[in-house]
Image (cartoon, rainbow, N blue to C red; front, side):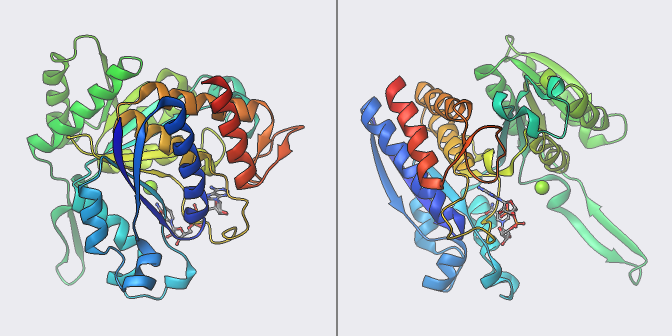
Length: 358
Ligand code: NAI
Ligand code: MG
């Protein structure tokens, strides 16, 4: 199957871990007889240096024409003193907005060989395997009016959603639950907020279209507690922008290391941008020691969610798990009796597992 993928390496370790993603894609291509057409484009500080803007028009156009987009990371101290419109992060916000990516997917899964690295007790995190589906383009972060009033004595932010905005994210939640373990937890604050009451009504309406999915409603405060007392009790969580921001960061610390976590921002027609959760890590950039696993698992997520290659995605996840079981790790992870490797070495180890199993 021919698929067009745009690669946006960006800045710092983004460039290094994108090399790992390319090698994994090449291995999948030959094992499964696919044809990936890769096109590399500039974003962030890299684009500022080369073209004077954080998001060149050509980059956005190439992404719009692709089947999926893979992003490394953007930013770094070199560009910290740029005016706001010319900061690398503008490129990231611009591309999410430009492509209309309204759903943020964040899977969080515990790794058996890294349970000791979690801040929670091993028996609590043990079987955690969840997906947080967060609304990304509405709610409090974008609602109008937002202003200081009365000579700065009063302030207002607005939590606004349209029915259509809630419907499309709720559908994403149900669709994710359908391809996972068929359990959807909708998180809101319906005891206080009118927007949450409408959210809850829409979830209940949509439930009729997904009879195989079990639906549960949870207030956001209760959800925050359950995440640390019983994280394995979740399968898919769907929630609005602000609640999702907080809960996804809370969930991301469950498994131990920032370098391990993938994410996706998608829209209804399947186009998505896939990226690790971490930033450009200027403190370790250029040393060849970055953990590429978040990037490699983002590649797996891309295969599953945008390119319909579930089996290939599973093969990558298994190869990563096996690699950790074998004790191989980068310097950000602490594995007892393990072998510390460079970015390139651990990528090769993962590919070795991938190609011997396929
Ligand atoms: P960061 O995620 O880049 O780094 C935080 C810490 O985690 C650092 O000590 C770093 O070395 C470590 N780390 C992160 N990813 C790692 C990996 N794959 N392997 C090993 N260690 C890893 O966050 P920080 O330092 O707050 O931000 C650095 C730059 O990245 C800033 O310019 C920031 O704006 C940008 N950033 C970009 C994001 C993106 O592109 N999506 C997200 C977050 C930050
Ligand atoms: Mg956040």
